[in-house]
Image 1 (cartoon, rainbow, N blue to C red):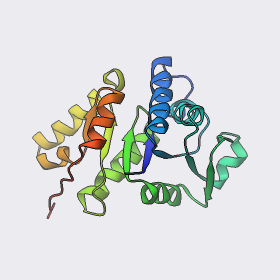
Image 2: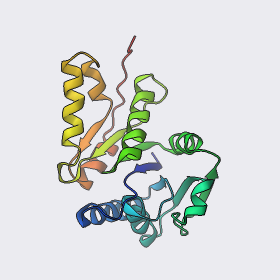
Image 3: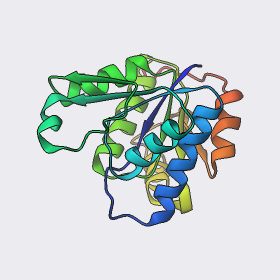
Length: 187
């Protein structure tokens, strides 16, 4: 695995602990020689990851729909900045370039990115690691919802084996380094 896609919030209004942890994640990824692909934002968790990667001299691949250039929200320090015509193309390119996904705390955009990559994995379109970085238990309610969906038989239990949950940055790397692909047939 060479390139890790990091999903996360673009909000600056969140608790500082999430931003500090994201910056540490970016630094650690770069120190371990991983390239990072992300949504190219300069704010929030995305911006913090980017600052960490840049501080360590790592490769940072930003992918953004071109209309974000008008909003002045893009990180101008990306090693490579790729502009796409739509959000859909942005996600597809991020997914294609990634060897693994780390889902940091975020809002609706992050949720949507997570659910897309897990859906694609369920449909056997990839077998890449998907790791939820559950800082401060942020994702506990979503994980409970996933278990409830299984309990109510909207999803099969194996869906929850398509991703892992890490409580720390060290656990993220442990899971990356010890990843064993798991697939099942939904049908």
